[in-house]
Image (cartoon, rainbow, N blue to C red; front, side, top):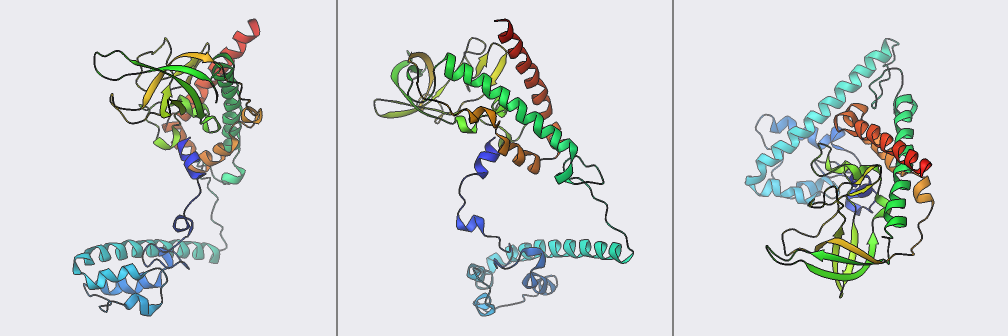
Length: 327
């Protein structure tokens, strides 16, 4: 999934730090910002709380000197008002939550647990049986999907790093495709899972899709390669099937139009001998499932078609096993 794979990239120091969205102090967040609370008392009456340019500097608020533009340039006062109003709403909501909790505690009542995943009461995500069940199903079907993908892509087609292939590239309308011979230099196999079956026209968010990426080089020039088969040989985004069903529904491409650096596989000249770590199959991309069930509720997964995808994949995987049992 794009969302999970993006979350694994190293973050900049600015992204890692948690700071107040109003005053940029690194020692608190906006819903407890005393600066926003005091400023809003004035701004809400149409009065500027501070006028000197270096006010933030005198206050000693770290990493906030850029805010001085609000005082020195009146054209930004409306933005100042909006940011302070937003922070004040967050402060009011935080106080309301604390008040409800305080009243419940005073009466000797505990706030009932509500699960953020299944919306059930009496438990949370950490001990949600439904979450555990869905997670294990996804991991299991991911293992089976990866096993099928390995057989089709690596064993049958020989398309891992080091394979020598011929591709064709469109160069213009009514022109013969350009044939290129070269090496596959990289694939994003470590990122692939059942979510490769989600195409660009799905109602699922971008974060759940995962295109396959195949890097190819010919005469020192890099290209992206897509795969197509008889089922949809004219597909713009490409696809990969085996004898049980769809495996990949989208491939990464360079640019667009006829001047791009994208090509379509035509033939395999020499298969790859690059080994694949067996744990790539057995671990079933479990870490991405943890991210998935933490980020999305059961209702969201259902609305995005993930549960239907899981059901379809199970049928395809069962079909694949049955075919191979009789072959």
